[in-house]
Amino acid sequence: MDGNDMSSEKILAPPHVPAPSDVIRTLRDDGSLDAKYDPKLSNEEAAALYRHMSTTRFLDERLTALQRQGRIGFHVGSLGEEAAIIGAAFAMRKQDWLFPCYREFGAALLRGLNFQRFIDNMFGNENDTVKGRQMPDHYTCRASHWLSISSPVGTQITQAVGFAWAAKLKHDDLATLVFFGDGATSCSDFHSGMNFAGVFKAPTVFFCRNNGWAISVPTERQTASETLAQKGIAYGVPAVRVDGNDVFAVVFSVRDAVARASRGEGPTLIEALTYRMGGHSTSDDPNAYRGSDALKPWAARDPIERLRAHLVARNAFDEAADRDMKLELERRFKEAVDAAERTPRPRLETMFEDVYAAPPWHLIEQRTKLISGPRPPDHG
Image 1 (cartoon, rainbow, N blue to C red):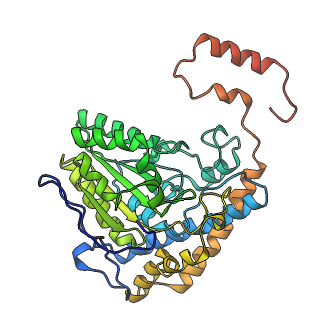
Image 2 (cartoon, rainbow, N blue to C red):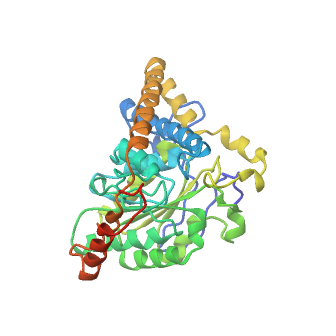
Image 3 (cartoon, rainbow, N blue to C red):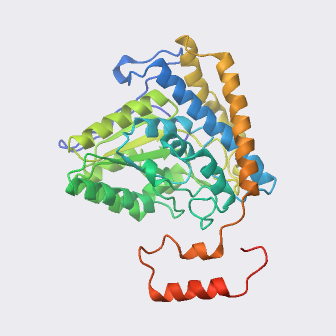
């Protein structure tokens, strides 16, 4: 699919499988909503989504600056994809579990990831939940039903399906949502996860952020499928395409998928059409493989500005409150970074923790030798 083509089309499907529909859009250019796909959010809920999306972009900008300054080693941003990420997380219920890719830190914060712990993870310090064992942006928050992030492409897909299948066997009313990019639809875990979920009707929402790029490979170079949604047909999985820069359409589509899962009707594949406005990560230079002209039509559909226009049209946008929010974000971020930089590194012996419920004898022996043996002066 051309990254700039957001046209609607019908996909033929076997009679027993709902065909991927036209692209679902709710938010019109004038800020009004299409009643057919309106998730009926209150002004307060819409304003909360705006704050979460704005916070996500603020953190992207500041964390990228920290990486450029050499104060953190890495960051994976979500510039331009905030509506898809925040909208999907917002639509999930408290009992549901989310399986992230590595670009969804905004969704983790919305679900309850502690702000300071997130910043601690960026520095890998003693207070980092994963104890500095993973690179930045690899956080976890079990209390928020947020699984740990791993970098290999697509591995979270089969994990989400397995978790959902276990819940179904236990008769637990919960669904899983798994985030992945367009490139992951070409990996074996996507095939395995979709096939299993389709056969056993696992309550999983497959949420594909089609942002146009698999790192430096455009979507049309890594799959021959006309759309990504149509891949659901092969597995008997209903699929829809949604305007990923329209937070209302995303909330509507994900809520509908969760409702299907809760009724025992199985999985749904959602292809959210959006665009990666930045690089794949701070280690990537997108100017090496795409021209600046590619950004222009998507910048005009900025998801945060579109939501702001809606709030203005509803007389629900407060300029003063918006300024106060940004000032408060600056204060919280500075304080969190200062605290993270003052916090020491994790103790070396923590590498043996959170591995086994009951550590085997040989790890106990290794831990004892590590603690009693010599070590560099900066490792407590």
